[in-house]
Length: 385
Image 1 (spheres, rainbow, N blue to C red):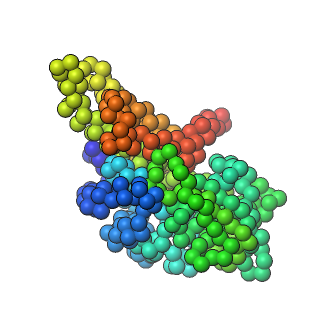
Image 2: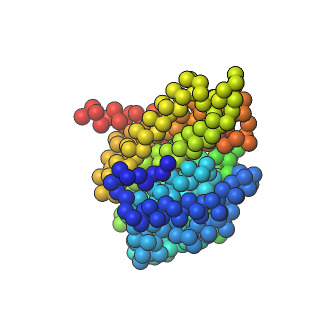
Image 3: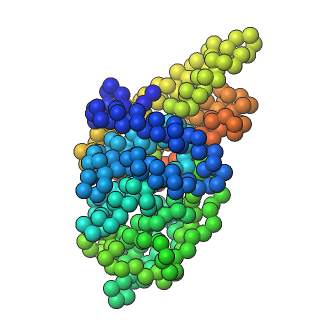
């Protein structure tokens, strides 16, 4: 299966060609290195550069800043195909998020300085929101940015940061005014290279997605020029986050769909080959019914995601709808992959089989990007109006 189908109302001929190109690139450059990335706990910079050279990361960036001038559909395809080939190491999803913060809120100078290098893979981006004492509760963050001369003096700690060890550019959520609550939140661009007072923690030893570098970030009197403020004035950070979180949540669902399609394919191959009681495992009614259920859920999710991609391209994707697709996509992925692992029997518990890694990698999708419990609360709020 593919993300781009006959019923994808947002698709163009270019999207179809791009999907084929991305599949080829991943087959040649990503799949052979997946075990290497997992062993090292980080994706090589050479791969980031290769992906940039191939044009994977610039599909929705204007040509003025090194991109192809396309839409979110190109990002969506790249993210789906990554999940479809079973990789959870490469942090392109975060790179896409960082790119779109700059596209939407960056000044001309900020865009000119960083967008071409993010597109080319020369620099790697990260989004630093979560802290040891708060996850989805952005209003409660403790990281501060105090004005000193023409700089901000930044102090605080960020946790669970995807691309944390490799990030050159961090979109940092901070308080520029602690007395104003959400209205005191600002986003500041942090160029981490040779930055005094900035430290990275040890890589976090995770249950899954072990090829992706995830770490804590520490800011100790870090001095950053005030020109690195994202947006025209302080206090816009919460609004900026709320405007961009729908894309972050949609891309989680897109990756989940790719993993679902791989899980179903791997399971079909296994049950058609595996013999039990003198017949194929596929010939047992339980197997056939479980896979029929999985395929139906996958197609329902595919339709929902394609509708959301159209909405995000038209700048109409609501927070509540994005919360629904993130919650439903991640929940469905975990349900389907769990059933597919069960159909593998004991072999499903062996990490030589892709289904085992899909099982551990998918679990965090119900947590990051806002836990599914938070998603349900956001959905409920939209109903209680």
